[in-house]
Amino acid sequence: MGPREYGDAFGALAARYGGGVAGVLALLRRYTWLAAIAFVVVFAGAATVAVQLVACWAFDELGVQRLELTTAPENVASQRVAERAGFTREGVLRGAQFRASRWHDVVVWSVLRGEM
Image (cartoon, rainbow, N blue to C red; front, side, top):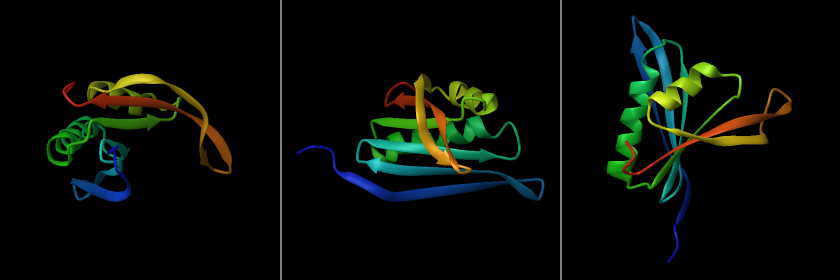
């Protein structure tokens, strides 16, 4: 039996700092073996730790094999978060994300179970 598709298992975490929101991080489980992490950070410094914590939880508690994270090519700060969190840059998916009324490229990052 192959991997089962989920697509609907979703969790989100909001962090507070100094009375405001430091950022929001979400995990979308696509299959039994694959999940994606998305984050928006208001307060710099918290993102790397938050991504690492959610990644460890996904590997340990959900049993996923692979985590993916995508960033905009021009978003250097998010790419640094991905790299510091232990993700490997895999490449660019051209025209893979539709936002603001047009298609945009995305940089794909991943980490496998046992790499963190």
